[in-house]
Length: 450
Picture 1 (cartoon, rainbow, N blue to C red):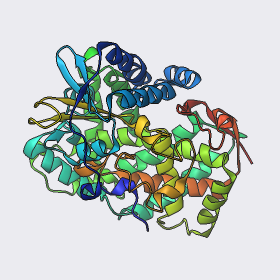
Picture 2 (cartoon, rainbow, N blue to C red; picture 1 turned 60 degrees about the vertical axis):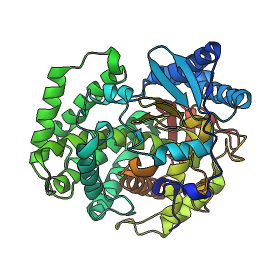
Picture 3 (tube, one colour; picture 1 turned 45 degrees about the vertical axis):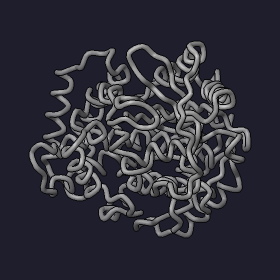
């Protein structure tokens, strides 16, 4: 199977020299970035998407406006990083793909994923998550996550039971409805995820994810929202209880088998797995949306699904590529944050870096396929060669659950494509090959089933 960009860090030895001379933006341009890049991204919801805000963003195509602004700033200031003159916080924005590769390759030092802004958000529901950990605790938690999630393995060792779970739920998803909309799709997707992560889908398991949703909505506000200690206590208590059932075939049970020092907090890693699967649901639904509106790619995907024995774990490289392409077109993590732990050529220790991924994923000056659905770039090396195409981040802090996500998403798509036809309605009907919108409201996706 071809190596995908999601599974590889950039080869920095082959990158052209990176301009390390930060350029200082004017106060006016900093205000434009705040208004057209930061405010819409925060308003839509970085931790939990807000449906009304995302619908408005699609109508106004706010990501297109942000991409256009950053192209203009790169032309005027050069490749950057661009220094934003903000009171009390030193922030730089890379504008060159090579800078993104160097920044992400430098984790956890000198560019730590644990930024003040990220910690303020994630501590609402995962105070001991690896993304906001440092030092020895981070190394131990990262090792535990990698041991359980098995990055680099296309089919997890537990994938045999997962394949049947996904096949059964795909059938349920398509049963009894003349249409399939985003709400129905997401409900069934979470049924799958609760079984994969927690080992079941009882009322108590559903309560776990409901409480997590409440905490994630608060986390959207980061510093600005007080932490709901009682909700957090209820969530943690119920999560402990459900994982304590040690149900076979689940990631939770696999985690419980791993030896870990008390300070590692193995159960404290699980909230991030559930959080990440929310983005997986969005990416999978958008990939189905893309396939329904692109006949040639749909034929290739159906052929792969038809030839696969879906009763067993399958790699499904083309469908994996479709999911990766969905995330390239509409990144589920639009802002990657890093903070320097020491002085670097890009700024003093404590400097924050903001990578606005839609800019690098949809830049027509560097990507001839910027606004097109081209899954083949993830199979023929083109995506791998671009260090700024980062659907699962990159470098030492790359998402350790990327292969679990891609297996789940591609297997679900294969089962859906074998069982039904999908005629686009709602948001899905607006996708025009070669002229894809920069902002897509997945809440509005709907299909007529045949």
